[in-house]
Image 1 (cartoon, helix red, strand yellow):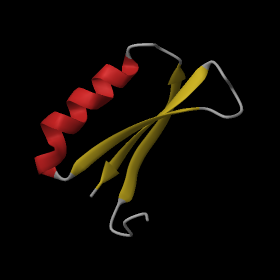
Image 2 (cartoon, helix red, strand yellow):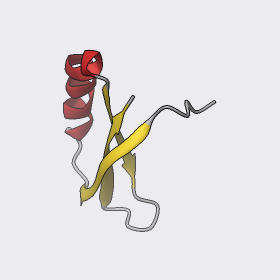
Image 3 (cartoon, rainbow, N blue to C red):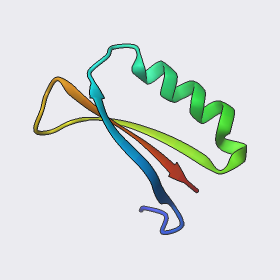
Length: 57
């Protein structure tokens, strides 16, 4: 179930990088108390791209 109180602040498409998930993990651990959450997903259309998203919780 998706929380309806989560809002998207910003989204950017970046080149695929094997270690980018480490950045997302440390951002989530560091900034969760500031009501921010970060996501990373593979782009379905461009397999060499990833989508980085910042959410406000």
